[in-house]
Length: 331
Length: 258
Picture 1 (cartoon, each protein chain N blue to C red):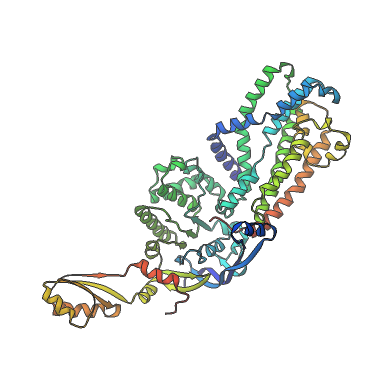
Picture 2: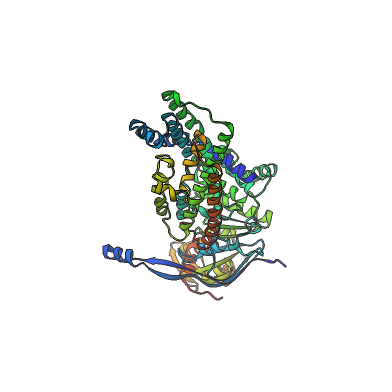
């Protein structure tokens, strides 16, 4: 049985947030008597992650995804509850823990801006006590996987965003962490770079059996990498389970476009009792429930002359939009 | 140790990218030479029983000590803490202050040739001031300059840690600027201060920042053992304070800006 590598129980986090009224009066009042309010941004959450899993944290801006990641990697201390990551308490930041994890933030960089990335790689290697020979081997392997061999010797400031992000990834993975925390890793990247990064993460996960915990607003990242998602809404978990199940339940129907051989056939199909979404000449789009798709298609193929057929999944973004606004999902 | 050495190498390569900026910084540190001019033109040196040559050597030494003890960690740290740049470093198995520490040392190494060129120009205009310090005193002044740097680095690191509680900790550092300027010996040798100032000034860290190492380098009279004891005393006082503040402060870290 695969063991849990991350265990979170009753986790909460509160911040003191200063509030100020607008205008000069508000500014003066704020100057003499500062008002702060305590805001609970994470509210008593529980979850476990198994070794080798890739988990997507989903939620609107400010839902609390990044705060959860920051607590998991030990950057911030929880207000209540407990976290165990690979047997360590993250906020204690013991050397054993730090050598086991990595955090990659799409909008933050650790590479030295004016030097080629190779300098930062060797620096990180020595910080993580990796000898030069082994570091060289790992840099070679990772740069091959990421396809950035030539970029290693160009100052970071001269690299494109995609090349920089790949270099950041290499710097963050040189110590072969078992657990990867990724906060918007594909932010700002073009479609090709996003796809390359996703492919890399997939192969890194399968090669090293590493656990990956990521947040992203690009749904393609989530759908192509994560089998399981945790949806965060206002600091609470609104859904924790298989992505497939969530999508299925939130989108129970498929759009089926049928190109009939004649308009007459299309008219006949329109009157046959299927739910019709639209009809243009000999093309008719039906809305068919997921569980009835195969039987319905069989009946259509047997009874009507058709030229072509397309099954369209509803756009994933539309489904995710539903997730972000709902408080709780129980299927 | 390997980590620190690699860090130092990388920081030195980085500093070489900024060599023009560093040369300008070195030039901007010539305040002791202005002070020398004021002192000699007004014959103020006679009042403190120190001849022109010794005074020139003192201010050149003060210039050198200053060049190798300049600290700006509070500003770098504050920016990194406020913009969230600290986050990746805080979860690495090396205290981020080592990055700042090696950054300073690398900057000093880069600065050295420029400081030397300025000293050569100084000797061209003041040939009577040329001297080569006794090797033992040269070594002692090197050690005391490094200790002076450590004291200043620790003072600023302590203040920098206050960023975890108050976002603009660098404003606290400004409180130290005036006493450092006036009491460290940068503008005048501490020996020239009135007796009532001298009665308490040696209990503060300031005279050990410039005056003590500069006196050692220039060959002026100074109490060597007392100077080193006080430098070590301040380091031993500041270091645990810094580690305590760092330990408590990181619990308060909110990883803003990320």
